[in-house]
Image (tube, rainbow, N blue to C red; front, side, top):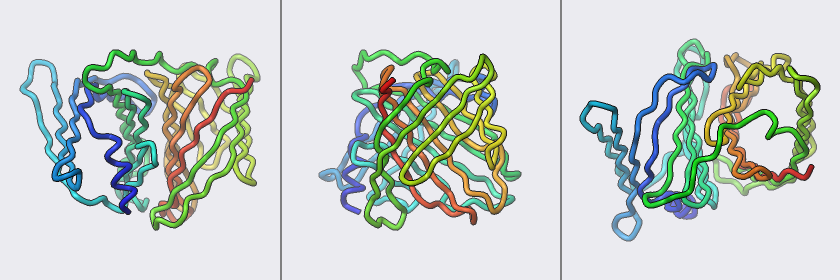
Length: 273
């Protein structure tokens, strides 16, 4: 548990950015400038977090959180990447998760929420940089940037804090025609192949169980979520980040067929062709 707290501390600093709301179809709704500060106190045994929203033509809105321990619903990786969210999905209840990745002096977060009908309902993309940073934001993700062969490594950590699992990954994304692409994913001893229909900045995997869509978003981000969660189906929630033309990270929250949170996986992959 002590290492989890140390990994949280990798996120300390003043992060300047914005909360951008999108529809479940990836349509822009609104953008609110924000400053999120995480300050270590009492020799970093406590953290004070202030979320300041700066809506246009309105006074600033502050949310202050202080904590000295971590909830079971959040897990961190050694580089500061994290996810927090629901530990259990159930019908007739709201459900969702937040993801966070850091690279140098920039941070990318995403919040995906489902309504009480278990349908994908709200999406917020949070693009941030440390105060004083001049590192530019990345362009919006395009289908063409995903085409190719990606090899990497996945690390899975678990809510019961058992030992992590590490294994190689292989992803082949092939453009079949102007409207379709094929994705073959090999991780561990499993292979998953699926075909998506391309519709602008959306990829529709209608033959998956459950059907999912991948939204291509600003700053090289992507969101992979089922459109609807149904009983007795395993599913994942995933955020991706194209850090450079040949390096991508994905952080994946996996759920079992009883709706239980199984684990959190961080994939770091490089394009080889």
